[in-house]
Image (cartoon, rainbow, N blue to C red; front, side, top):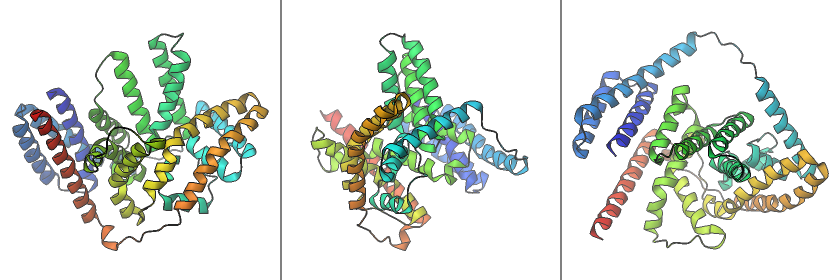
Length: 393
């Protein structure tokens, strides 16, 4: 337990170092604040003080200076245009061919939505449809994430697991995940999902326990190590991790507050409702801060849509396969897929008609800080209450 906590603490220290450098905080003030926090943590948890103070401080210092080094290196480094690799070109051609087949066999909005949910492609979205998705709080369904990786992993393990060894299935699955990320362009949410998916597969392959919290921090740390600026400048990175953290840590709080019993309800509405609400609670301050918008219709809209998004993605991959085999088979398959897509489009358009004005004081960094502090305290309080009840029982 102590080792896992140490890994988590060092990862958070590195991220805090990068964040403090990006905010141009004074290094000595940052280091002093960190020493106080890590000392209190070690005393409260009764962990070895030298290990839980000195090692995290080292990671914090590394994160602080690494960010500044990266920025200075970017400023003085001669920017050479990167040439697409042969494999990325081939994958890009394959993706574009499938999207063209979607355009041929489906109406415009349906083809655009399927391209978005399957390959993360949004170039065919009309401005009107983009606005409707934003107002209804459903833009995230075309932001490739864990859904796509999970479908890929499930499909590959089902297809290959019966006649290939676990090691070979693991290797092939890893290669396919990498190729898929390259093909769809590697946005923050899909990279996060790919790294976490790989770490889960690796833990299973090695027979090691999979700690979700440590995996999230490790994933964020790896992404920030590659590009430290994404921590504060990439909104997609922020939304991806905040929504995931909201679902993991705040969803149990919501279920407790509303005293929700076991069971998902019709079309999984309970699970979709709590998942959507927890993610929305986690990302709302960032959306308001950057875009000055908040969708009050996100919860009912997502309850009606999320249950069939994995099915849509599955049929999207299936349709791409059918199109590669026969255009006739693809055309017939598109008729079935279009029924699901039209349902989603109707939901999006219906809930996009309700707007909510956002007060100006909410779009401030002070509000964001207070909001997340209150959210963390609420989660911590709930966790303590849950633990105390378990001890009593």
